[in-house]
Length: 301
Length: 264
Image (cartoon, rainbow over all chains, first blue to last red):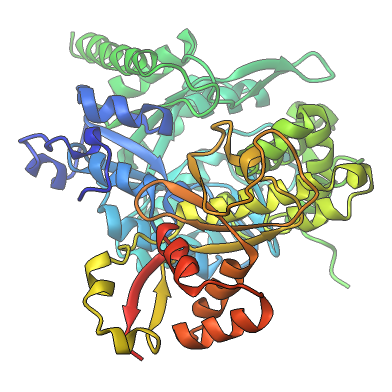
């Protein structure tokens, strides 16, 4: 098609078939518009790219032209941020249909959403808001995931959230809640290691114990990202999940700890704000790979 | 009445200018922490303002960050998004700006917002082929006047009170070429208090903005409503003395907004 700039027209890579097979391991980064041209031109050695579904819900134009081109070379992971699975009200039907549309269009190898809510009828808040963990919220989350998996027609992964507060009405831990969700709904889980570190630091609990309690057998993908350190008014740590910088050492080690326990999983670097040059993002993916090699070698020693 | 759920209490406190931590929401050791709950309040407001700044970059630039963020916060509180696709948030910002007292002396900036919104719609609209000139040329001359035109899904006809197309698109904040198809087009960098008529369309990946004269604009609107060339031409001629159908049709085609021609 003559409507594409030259670099979009460059030939797809020869191992195109790889794209259509699922992935069980490998390293990817979040796809940012700033990096489109470089990725198409330089074909970096990554296994997959992840996109936020909501950024590709328009009908056409440049976003789809670029993503379709990149999807010829790489498997795509679709990560929804707006479905509000942890919400109290029914899912937004129109939005679920649009999400289904993105999944049908890009046939992603991974498909995920969050254990959080972002809408409370009629308002959309654009943040991943926390929910209490009770029998009532558990039943509702399972019901919502059933609906998503039925409508979209495939399994989804549910991501553990980063949280800044707790709820006095919660009757179970997050790891128990996630295990029950996965068992009852048949969904997989997305283990966000930075979120574990952030939430555990914020709630004053131990991150390694969280990993120990996590139902690792359901994990289909791992996320890593950076966070911003702060303090609350009592002088306690208040870490904010900002995705605007490098992964810090304690999070790398926690990642190694999880990998040693569950084995390799597709791992994604998230960097959504103050997006750096592509090389820097790539460097984080290389570090993830090294951490995996080290921790698996240690685990088998 | 049942007690509001924690979701409702949480949600209600997110967009209030001042709010207490909702009951049942605690920090570590059960402490009530306004700083912790404040992270959510801040994320919600800051991210929605950022979304508006991303959808209206030239408005944000013209107003400056401080003014824009204060104005956007008021807009967000009054008209928060109703669905999760934020590239579709802000349709009502131009109207809000027109009624925003601190902007009374800068009302041209609401026109910039109108144009930026039209650009955003064109940018994300469905891909569609442009009319090939051969197809029009192949039409028998006697059939031309009875023909109707269809337009690209990206086509937006925008009437502005001020000549702001060059200001909006001239400095590269948007990927948008401006074509001055109007003999008396405005000067770049200068706001004339004079209406301007724009045809936006995305014939390929790039949005284009054609500035046309009022007669052409009127004529294209008639065509877009499904009138034939002769119907639209007669209506234009009745309203605009000296309307030149051939010149206006050429300008319409040059705008890249026409997708097809259909025999009447």
